[in-house]
Length: 72
Image 1: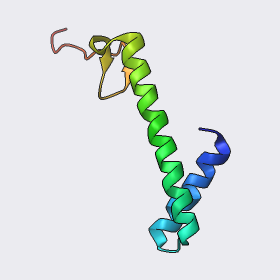
Image 2: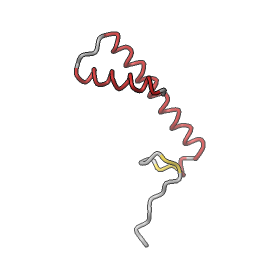
Image 3: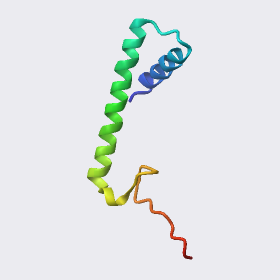
Image 4: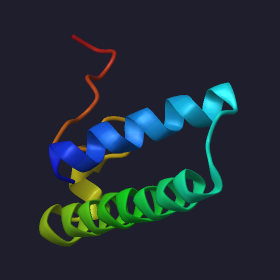
């Protein structure tokens, strides 16, 4: 998501938390949240497609990260 949209999303979320969103801003916020969620889902799907679920640690969302065993 472009920096300009990310900044606007943050501004609108803060206004929403303070209860000062207009109806137009509420609609804009919903559209930006939908866009953000779509991008996040597409990124997650691409990660699984490119690295496979067996190589993805769901906690870190980084490919190839594995837990250390207790034995050393």
